[in-house]
View (cartoon, one colour):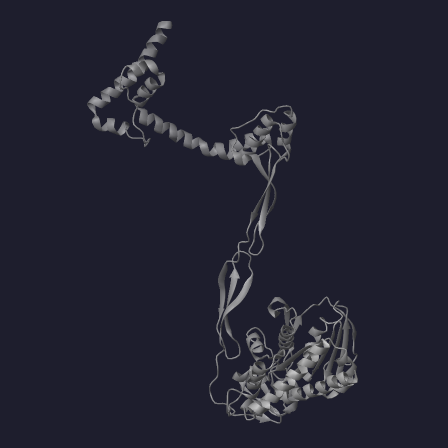
Length: 523
């Protein structure tokens, strides 16, 4: 029996080389197909002299392994078999074994468990099974140096960075318990075009962008409205002008001379305004009163594209010319806020369609312009909630023209949500839109007494101003003598005037100069 095994061994040892050499001698094509390059990117082991045989058994092993019969075919077969069993092993067998042994499914967690078992130190546990491994090996303190470095850290707290806010990550070294914190900068918005809106005759064009990361939107790249340049003869009903697209404008009350520029002042006349304002400013400075003068453009100044074709003698009209002169010859806080209202109408209407006044959006723009004159903090309306509500057609221009409201489409009322948490503690009972004198009080912490003298445009400013001053008085200029005590105790004094009433603003200045000068004489 022993001889049989020896014979089998010799056959297995010498038969493959004999067959290999036989193929090599008899069929060169078959030999080439069996002895192909495996892409190992190395040279075969060579024995340069006999001394290598005595020094290294590895050299001898590698030499004969590189020249073994059917080497390429055998290695290829092994690779094929390994590949066939690798996928089920990784996807089914290996996870099942890890789950059974460690109650985890990630190989990095298994390594963590192994480290714990050898190091014996642990601050935070990824699973109950790992904790059990630690508890069972608490006395072991051996150092395990070959573990991958990243497996020694566990994230304990994380806040990813977003478009506006920075982020951070807190990790702990599970060997030492040392804690690390990483900070990440805000990523910034990644704007993508969401919608392109073309302009029309009644609305601007714009591009809406959306951030692909957070979904926030913004509106930019405005394009001007289309302008109807066809001739439209003036259509006047009473004190009302019917303009393009049913926009109504004021014809009476002395408004048209301002639009047609037939009432431009001389330089001497404009100098009177600047001189009176400088005198009033000096008196207010002496009393420690902050003074501001704000003039509000007429509706046709902000929306000339809807006006019919009246003859205009000079595009540099009375009030813009007068405002430039005052700003050049006076140091007082003065503004004609045409540009602010024209810019804002891209986003919302700033005047009522059927009324001669600005709406609550326009009034809010005016309040913020006034605050800028007074060096007070301002809040851009684009950061506030503005509610848009459809209303049935109405307005003073429908009434002044004797028009039928049913002939006109609905308009939009805008509600600007400004400091909704501030509650006034006192307000005059009469409606602000009809009261000649309107007083409010609110606990806003500044103990400032505010007085505004003006016309009907002031009423639309009340809802905002009353939330920023403890004591407010709003008075129609014809009733100014009814609030003398309020004026004399004021910390902030504002003169407001519509464009067509600039000359009345001059009368307001004259009265206040007389009042303050009389007080100085009495004292």
